[in-house]
Image (cartoon, rainbow over all chains, first blue to last red; front, top):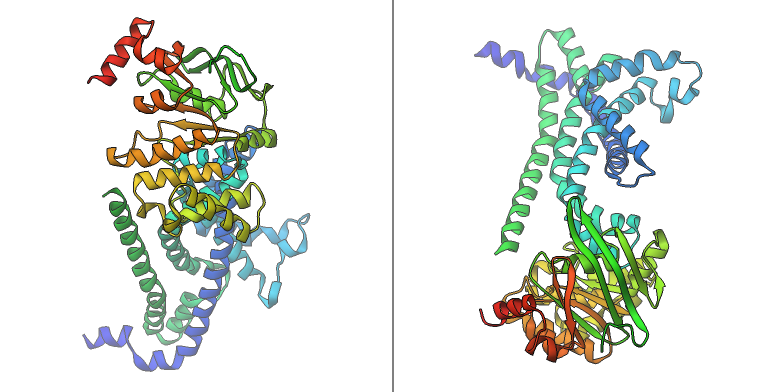
Length: 243
Length: 252
């Protein structure tokens, strides 16, 4: 039992490396928030393209379906490697894509953000789509019958309702995204898992990784509770509405 | 008082056909509604009454025939021109279709802001007037889920009126209501009729059709089987199937 405690909960290791792990976790949080925000926007764009009924936009719709199928179907790690390994060598791309050094962050940082956005955009598109399709057709019909254009009806009537219903699954996907930022370490981003691993390599002790796990939980557990509460409220409202 | 085209028709439907796949729902329907007239459409379910209304403001695509508003064809309008026509033709639905994420007041104010470009303050002032008109000023800040069916339907009527429509379409607006809530909604409709609104009303409320309409159409299997003044059609229908239908609904 002592060996177990010493391996995972060595307070000296934790104290000595607290700053380093915290710094890594700060990178994790940054990646999550930046990629999360981009994914929210990119996913919505994809979902709108995916659900359009306009015949003129059919090519866009087909492209969106293809994109979503591809990036839901391959591992994030693969996307990370594909992007970071070859983008710098594709000479006709502008420099800010081949070697992005924006806001004082290294290129691997932005490659990580891009990979997460590409993959989670596809996931979130499907979440949004479910929400859009769950809005009853009568809502659009009521809006159109008042003279609203298709886009006004979408913006003022359909999307506000759709987004409301998908907040819990969006939060779930944010939790997943946050955990998946750890994959970005393979291209050299020192986020919390990488920081913990470096300490593990130096000390032959896993306590720094335990510390990283605790930091994750401090964010993800309250989020999971919020998701639960929102789902319960939604159910109560629904049954109340039927009574 | 008749649909034979005498006087200027506010709304005219001519030779309307609608198919849902194999199903031929409307098989050549002609209707004419004079300005200020109330025309009720009755008939068994599945006879195409609702589809007829939904074709008028083009919520359903039309397969054949023409629809005229002020004798101008609107059948092939698209985009902004179609939106413009829909402003002029208000519609009230069986299931209200209020926007559940907005209060009664916002339900009425939203189209005023989005479609008419009013400021929030102006839109809300106008919305309050309209809610007052349907007797719901006190419920302005309630969400639809907190309103009874009859109240929701009256908000829906106020919302349609917000666009200052020249014609109102009512699609079985009391069918989803508890019996004791029907009266309030019908009263609002009666008021509208009295004020001279042009109305095309699909309904199962025979007393409303009888008292308020200038003309009643009996639809069966996608055609207008019989039409006439309510006094005639309800007391001395000329067609056997009209008689059978009226027998069933008036003396169940």
